[in-house]
Image 1: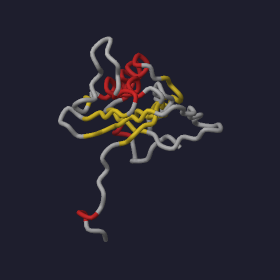
Image 2: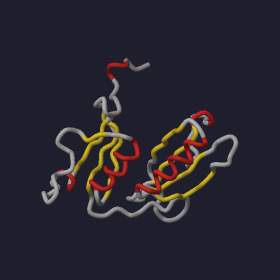
Image 3: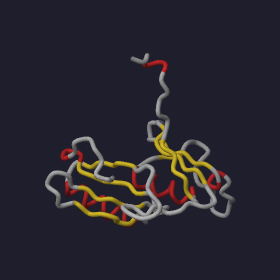
Image 4: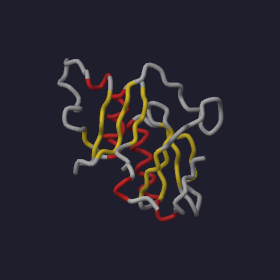
Amino acid sequence: MVDRESVPKLCQVVLDCTDARALAEFYRRLLGLVYRPGDEPPAAGQVDERGRDWLVLRTPEGASQLAFQQVDHLPEVTWPEGPVAQQLHLDLTVESVEELRVQHERVLNLGGRLLYDRIDDPDEPLRVYADPAGHPFCVFVAAHRSGLSGLA
């Protein structure tokens, strides 16, 4: 058994992307997060130096959640099949199938796209999306989940 004080703690999940500001804005709006102080978008007409490198989103209470690292090239994941396998995905939960329908519209309006639809599954209603950078993520009804992701 390892002493709890001697293990690292997860700080945040980092997503590589070719447009850090755009992807950060997608998740900021989708999840109701806020920028780490100093990472906010610049005033209109100003150069977005931070958005060219690294951005961090936090909860309104200040806990880090997601970071976005600018890269020059990123092959888009071809989930569920194809030459570019996913290496990580986010699981997002909602309380009901009706809320899943509401979030579906939000995801699409924010620039995500539907990859897989299993909303009618009585045991595991879920939808899999790609964010604007192509990273897959799930939105599922928490009450129906066994703790395992529906995304392989």
